[in-house]
Amino acid sequence: MTIANDFCVQLRGIHKYFFRGSERLDILNGLNLEAPEGEFLALMGPSGSGKTTLLNLIAGLDKPSEGEVWVRDQCISAMSESQLARWRTRNIGFVFQFYHLLPVLTAYENVELPLLLLPLSAAQRRQQVETALELVGLQDRMDHRPGQLSGGQQQRVGIARALVTDPALILADEPTGDLDARSAEEILDLMAELQRSLQKTIILVTHDPRAAARADRILHLDKGRLVDSLPVEPTPVRRSPRGSTRE
Image 1: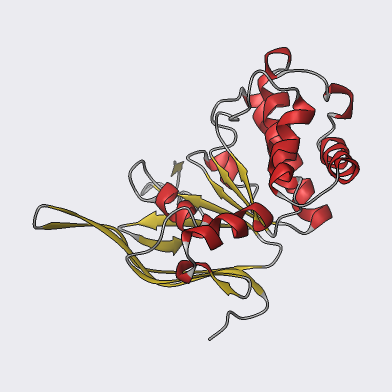
Image 2: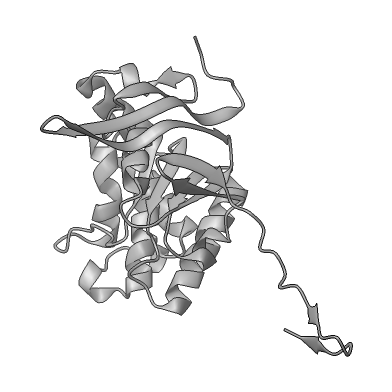
C-alpha cells in the first residue's frame, strides 16, 4: 500500500492512548488527516487536546498506538528508530516556540548543525547555510550569537535551520508564542512567503487565531478528532416590534 502522490502527509485511523493502571486514556481517537503537497495547514485546539502529540507522530518522534502515518510515499509509523532518525534529518524541519538555539554558537553554526549529520563537504554546507540565512533575511547576522539577536531574529535563525536540509515538510510548534505582536507578524509573513516561493508543506500548531488565519486551512482538535474550521457567522440583526434595529 502506498500514499497518494499528491499528499505530503496522510494519517489513517490514528489512535494514541496510554494506560494508567487499568484505565485507558485516549489522546487521539480514530483520527484521519490528509495534507496536500505545498499546503500551509494550521492545527488548533485547547491545551491538552493532543496537538503536540499529533505533531510528534507526523515527525516520527512518536508512534501511534494504532493506524498508519505516511509522509509522501513512506509509511514512517512502520520504521525502526534508527530508520526514523535518518529519515527525519533529510525530510523534517522543526520550528520551535523557544528557538532552541545553542547560545555559544553563531547564527551560522546553529543553522549548520543539521547538515553535520549528512555526508556533505564544508563547501557544500557553507553554500546551504548561506542560502538559508539569505532566505530569512539574516545573511548580515550570521556571525552573531543568539544573545546578540532580537527574539524575531532568533526565530528567523530557527526557520533557517529548519530549511537548511531542504526538507519535504516543516513542522512549527507555536512559533510566534514567545514573540511580541510585530515580530510575530513578521515571522508569519516569512513563513507564508516561504510556503509560496519554495512550495514547502507547513503544519503549524498554534493557540493564536491570528496566526492560524494565515494558513490555507485550519483544523481543530476536538475529543481526539480533527474537524474543519467553520466560517464565522455574522451576528443576526434583531428588529423590535416598531421596526427599529438592535444588535
